[in-house]
Amino acid sequence: SAVISQKPSRDICQRGTSLTIQCQVDSQVTMMFWYRQQPGQSLTLIATANQGSEATYESGFVIDKFPISRPNLTFSTLTVSNMSPEDSSIYLCSETKEGYYGYTFGSGTRLTVV
Amino acid sequence: TQLLEQSPQFLSIQEGENLTVYCNSSSVFSSLQWYRQEPGEGPVLLVTVVTGGEVKKLKRLTFQFGDARKDSSLHITAAQPGDTGLYLCAGEWLQGAQKLVFGQGTRLTINP
Image (cartoon, rainbow over all chains, first blue to last red; front, top):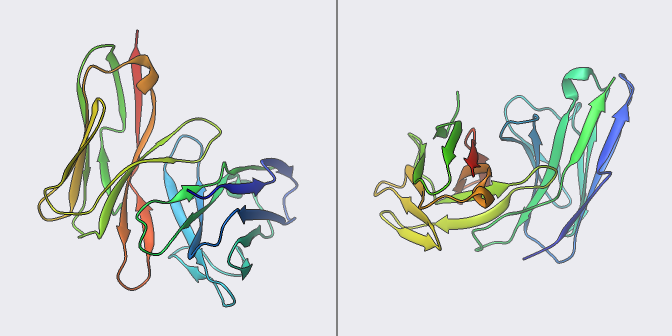
């Protein structure tokens, strides 16, 4: 299975600022996704990162708040914009290949907004 | 509204006991996947079930997919302290926009 490198692993940010999280996969993949996980809770899908086009966002998530880029098959970024303490969470990227039924996840970025 | 209802959300049992975790939905999925997550790490895939009625075994873990492909269960036999962790079920859709959505998770503690 693919190996995902996600960085930063953690950060503490001031409210009102933005943070960009990077996700690098070691092989070409078909699908990349971004999830949010509140401490001790399950994962919520934020969006599907589409190569060369706008990401597809889930209900409750908007592009202005969580802009996503995917310039090629192996790299994606998620930006958390104009942060507030409510954005404190773990953000994870994920990948899968077409026809393969398993997903691989990065180790996550633990974000604290103060 | 949670698409996948996972239960129980917390479970603490003694070493050697058996347990079952349930994952139920009103939606039909292309596959149902089970993950385990350790602190500070992303979820790691345990198994994928695709066919209605399918049963898969992974050592002491038995996974079952419901006939209608709406529900699944994870059964652990003779639980060990090393089984402690967060277990997550996830349903995948392949038709249309492919994506994976998670249940609430079951935090399992096995006491020695």
